[in-house]
Length: 80
Image (cartoon, rainbow, N blue to C red; front, side):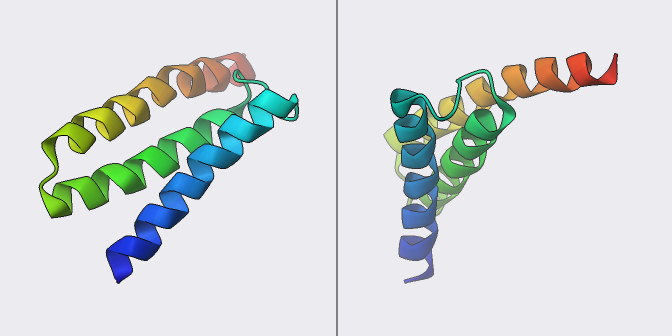
């Protein structure tokens, strides 16, 4: 039951980012878009690891990792 709640929360985060981008509410370069994708996909990867779903582990891990570079770029730009 706990994994179901975690997976739904992760999926909702990713869908909020996607819908926000599609509607023009959140730009894909914005920190909130990338944080929603990072946390959402990390939660889904965690559930996939616990369930031993290799395909989903790869997909969600890659999704999470791809969300990190834009966040690093934003952090560097703000530090200047």
